[in-house]
Image 1 (cartoon, rainbow over the protein chains, first blue to last red):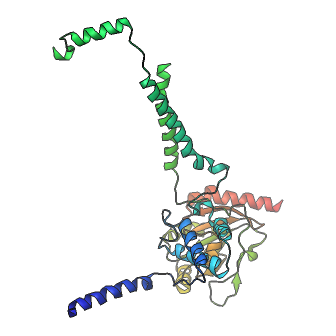
Image 2: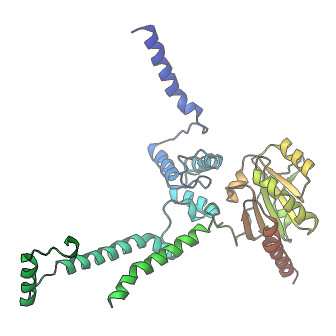
Image 3: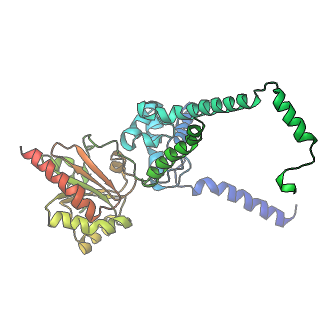
Length: 160
Length: 180
């Protein structure tokens, strides 16, 4: 292996290793995988209020960093349950922080609306399809007219 | 009979259009606060002036007051500053300032140069109290009644219009309620 290659590989490795060190958060330590899962799950479920379409996990806003610290403190250091952590956040920021809104009368339309629309749309489509495919034998007059149209040379007004 | 059926898509379209039109007039960055109608979270923070003791909602008990969260790095705070000055000086509203994630020196300089609308200033460099208050966009302004209940929250800079049409009338109403 040439010296140039070795330098390049070393450089690439160094760049890869530098990644986690540059990130704004301190390195998290977990006692067990369950704890880590609880932490990671929550970060994905909670919206960052500054960049509303990013989760706490992916947002780089300062508030998101603070809230990641809070979630870490709650579920890892204080060993609280997921529900308690969610309560903590919704009490301060409202249900809006949750990507999955809670089931309650004001969100019923949100939860069931799509299913209702699907059933409605499917029903209408089925009705239309059934109407179109309904067939009956032609009457004598209709037979006569069809024969006349098919045999005549007249292709209609456009052809004249 | 047939005609009425053709109207259905039009009606559906109009309903959706109305929903979308209403949606367009709303600002998605203003999230309703769950804290309205609830007691203001208790805190005790060092005052902005170094070694000047601590301050918190307890000091404001029994009166109607505003809690204003601000910082020197926040552009909206610059915008609303003269409105707060107006509220404090001309209308005599008591405002507790909460300097959020800021530097002490810069904040003191700001108050010195631009004027200090605050009855007192608390200093929250880590933003811990900010989290308890559900702060996500500075500036934020709360109206708190004599019992320490949050009655109103303005997210973003308070305009002269907000002050005159919403905040001041509410403050007066709450003060009258407190007197009776």
